[in-house]
Image (cartoon, rainbow, N blue to C red):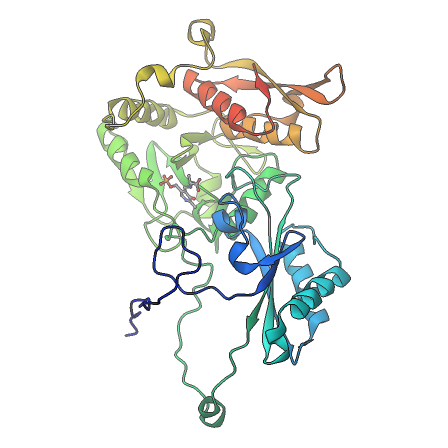
Amino acid sequence: MHTHPSVQVGRRAAQPFSADNLPMQALPDTFCFLNGDYTALQDARISVLDRGFIFGDGIYEVIPVYGGRLFRFDEHIARLGRSLAEVQMANPHTAEEWRDIADNLIQRNPSTRESDHTVYLQVTRGVAPRDHAIPPGVKPTVFAMINPLKSQSATARAQGVACVTADDFRWKKGHIKSTSLLPAVLARQISVEAGATETILLRDGILSEASSSNVWVVKDGQLMGAPRDHLVLEGIRYGLLETLCRDAGIPFELRKISHAELLAADEVMLSSATKEVLAVTRLDGQPVGSGQPGPVYQKLYAAYQAAKAASEPTAKAPAPAAASVPIEGAESLIEYPSLFPIKVMGPKVEGFVETMAAIATEHDPSFEISRVQMRDSSGGKYLSVTLTVTATSREQLDNLYRALTAHPLAKYVL
Ligand code: PDD
């Protein structure tokens, strides 16, 4: 069996870039390119909200540089273009611009004249609030650097090298809560484009989960979910729903669920830290069961709220006043479910309306773009957008209000 040796970090005298003096490897003293500027690699900074960091939402290339000359550059740039297109990112540069960047790096890094190197190019989807859905109108992060090309030893050349075999598990370890979420981003985008809240995924005709939530199917009063295996991220709500079902007398089973069973379900629901439990009432344009949140959902939702209310406050929990309701007085006035208009003011920029509508859809799966009304403000610089959502609970409205106010494009939410 192959085990992974633990990583040993060597002790070094100088630590050139380490704000908190953690032991780390010396970073190369080279020039890199970041978003239009050439800068020392050690000084290059990107936001922690960069989607490359948060989701692995990016594309890269590694191009050899022999004797200061780029090798097979056009082919690498063509593949970069294809990869970008596959993940729905616009190519931020023409082939000539990419060549200029690579040439500039070679010019500015004299070591490229002494030994072989590689040019590394990376494009990420840029910086945006964390949301799997692809954010509209965001500038990509463009980064390029140069690295020495470690040539193979004479022994390796003369004798060849050893390898081992393994199952090709790439993109098949769904049970790891990894930040390599590009497949999840692309999966979520399918639902965004269909005006839906989530994309429910099937592998070889068997239900696994959704792009960022688990999926539950109800048949004849029983709640069923996919088995705990490597194809599914076992949500923290797996255990919770099992307990809630037991307490509520709802039979609970984890087993393989076929596409046909999913389509024939009486109820379908999602669960996640952010969605709690959420009824799915339409699937691929067809109603699920009665087309309304069903009785098992209603029971589990109520049980979930009770579990929340019973959860221990942490030592640092905010005082109750801090969690006060943004929609003042709403509780006594609103009957649930009912249509509830929320007005959002924001800049008249591309994607503002779609972004606000996407947030509304997150909190109201029945929300449709036809329920958006728009008005220009007097100066023409701002838009006032009214989103009429189906309010199902005070909590849902609070969460929606918070999500809208938290978005940088939303200036006022009323
Ligand atoms: N997503 N499956 C996937 C692929 C998920 O990303 C998540 C959570 C879940 C549900 O896990 P839990 O019940 O522990 O939240 C299942 C989080 C909410 C996210 O990425 O935003």
